[in-house]
Length: 95
View 1: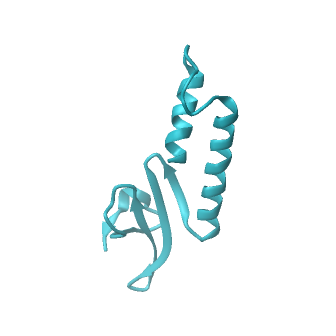
View 2 (view 1 turned 30 degrees about the horizontal axis):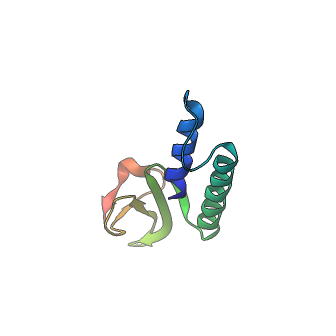
């Protein structure tokens, strides 16, 4: 929700009609600060944030004795993918 509000406020402020029911510049700054706090909490938990739109996160793990990153992409029904750190998303494989 915060991400969507921030996107709407940013778009409104960049347009010729900078009015939205969500507010204006102060609300945009507040949404940006809140999103920053949420992302800091995620990082503090050891999760690697790779993208926010769509949300893409990696979790350090070990698979068959090899260090890997478990990979979750917004829209995935469950955590069911992994990849080697040196391959990134392009090397994504099912668990």
